[in-house]
Length: 233
Length: 392
Image (tube, rainbow over all chains, first blue to last red; front, side, top):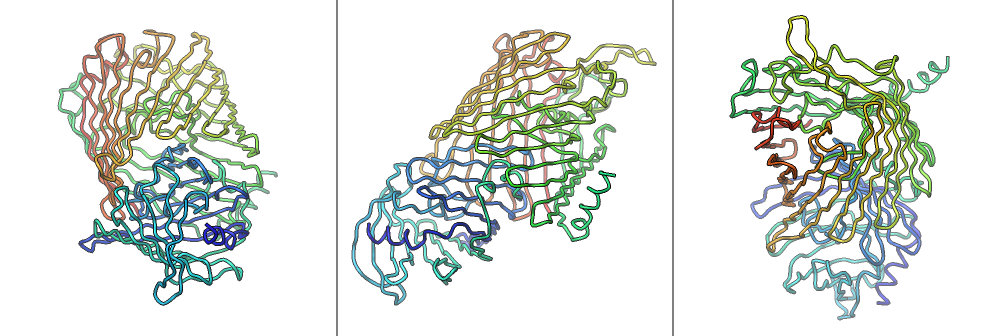
């Protein structure tokens, strides 16, 4: 719990950031498929972040945008903008465990990671690729989570996650997420350039690459409403 | 002079390069039944080109969107046409936004019928389901505040509803002669319509409250004779006031939706409502698939005199979302008239191929429609549609 709190404390105060996200989806036959999107995130005091994601690829969903107000407890608020119909739809956000855009990431894997979303247990000290780590187990509070538990390797020095093992509802090993190439922004905030998710049950994988990080880019609440969702593109 | 000042402000933006995207689509429709009129065709092939130009400048505060549309149709001259779907300039201020040009706006929450959605005219040439809309000339001011979003619209220039031509299917019998449309207002299609809408969300609730004053988008169709002595229908566009409410409650896996309106016209005032639910079963049968169950009731207090076929009807539908790499989706539904035996069936399925292609299929059936029902005109127009789309 102290470790999880320290992770959050060290990552507080960034205010906002913009970044591009690209996902390379690969199935067990090696067939690949690409997802490109842009992310804007605004930190909210004492609550989860506000996030706006706009899709660029695949082309049929270009301009589709997702606005999320994440909360420490309870369901997030989510609106989806469909550009062909000009329609903003409030969507049921309880579906956290389903694949995000057909990828191996579930919405709950990439949404705002608040301390309150899990219960924690310290397991051991160890290492991941030679980096001394704390090994924690965390249990999702939300009954709609797709996981019974997650085992997290946390860098002892920088307090950032290095690897997460996900266990499905039957407590079988499901996925492993590895964080690679951490960069430090504003001399404080660590962000991984790459997040590699591998599904052990299906043999599929997704490589999520973050680029063009821009912290404190001047985003405000006004950039996260239903009108800005329609403007986003 | 003022106009020129605006144009000068736009120029620096127009000089820097924007981006082109869009799609080309091939469509085939097959009608298994013999049409009511022998002039009408049994199948069609059609191609759409819809490029899209988008550009932003001034630190993304200003943007321009241009979407022309061109369709070629093998059978129907009215379907072979070009139009400006959108040509709109946007300025996003701090806590406000303004738009000017030809634009599209969607209001509402329900699925089977979009009752309160009133800004844009329906394009029945593009699609008989009424989901396709024509670009509407508009000047819009939006205030984005803590108390919600207030949109103010001035709509100069009315767009008449489009109808399939003489040789096309899915048309009225007798056919509509759009060239002879008449208006209640002396200003005809130059009448400036006004609208305002307040929308907000409070916790799980999304609410929209709107008023519209101007030309009714739904014409009355008046029988008449043309020069050749044939019976035709002439659209008559009345002036109207419409007040509407749309409401959605998002409660876990349940969405509860409702749209209500009151419309007052010289030919008679009425109330209409539609509402229901969408319930999503997440990850059915241990898979990644979601199954949505939809139910909506459609009501219009004009009863059998209503210009809409949906005056006391029930919609039941299924939405299957595969959540796969191809984004496969299937939506099937039935609308049953509760006053008679009539029902209609609709199925839409789509799937992506690679990054740039998409295929879709649609089936529409009308069955046991009584002669006095507005949907009777479609009773021999059941069809299958296939489309292949290439995005660029």
